[in-house]
Length: 241
Image (cartoon, rainbow, N blue to C red; front, side, top):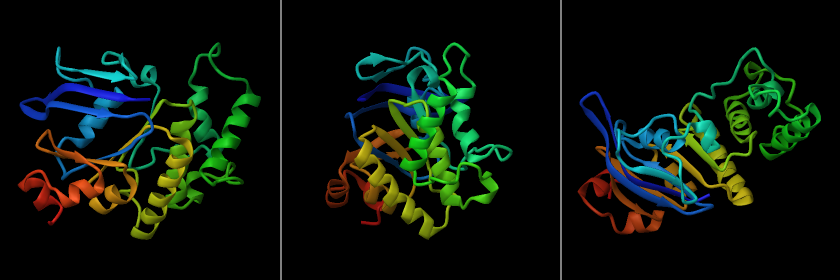
């Protein structure tokens, strides 16, 4: 699924969170939105997801050439993973993942056997086979985040969007999950965008890095391009070059 962001602006009260942002993402890319707190990177992700909408009459969001600007996140088939898991502690792993199916209208809901097969496959994909009966409180932080990934993938999204997915984890678990995400992406080729303020994380995982500051894109390029040829003083200073 290719994604095109066209001239998007977004204000919260008098604060301009995004100012005329445009970005093209190719099908199968893994993109990092990198920048300091308050730069606009999470707002951009949420606008792409359909969790926020751009200011009236400003810009468009295209999924594979189709204008989805007025559609909800569900209609866009976007899978979203939050920093703090957002799991239901009273539900076991299986039911947390199955929640995506349970909320569908009965006429749209797959059979129980299809749901079982789908979740079995997702548990294998996120390396949590045998954990389906455990509660979130019985899992490590890294395992809980992988459950959140599985839930986001349950309804076969066309794009995966991650809002600082490793931010609540300790350094070793973060590193292990970064490696897992890169391997998972390589095996699925699912178009993926993730937000981070950690440049090591962005450079280790992403195909391309999009540096954002003050609501605007400052530079886009591969990790090598950004490091070797910073576009301006902000990029050089932020990266410590």
